[in-house]
Image (tube, rainbow, N blue to C red; front, side, top):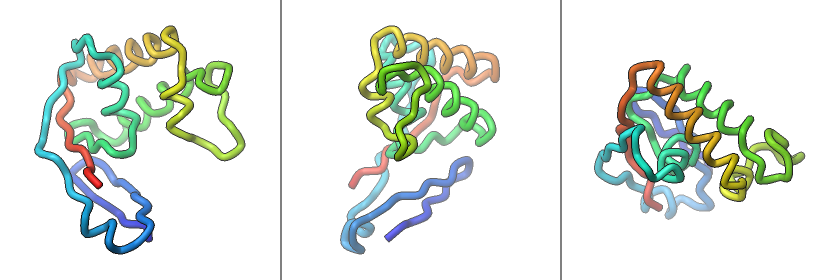
Length: 126
């Protein structure tokens, strides 16, 4: 079953194996993370991982962030390389430290340029 979850800024598609999973899904309380955080991994996850909903990033900027992160990941052996099955979180997760730094600086600079100094987000809890 595919469920469409809407918030003020984003549209999210979540695949659930059965209807019981849908009723168990909920979101965490709204949290914030500064773009100045030293936790580079957390900032990348909040932007790129499907289980986070960013609440204050317009869709156009979010799309730019996703494209930039995927262009910098090297989890499949080369920057920007994508396997035949398409985008897969492991490309980001398995990236080198250099690629992580590149992703972080891209995210930070893009948000700063668009005057977003922190990200408000919730997390889908299954």
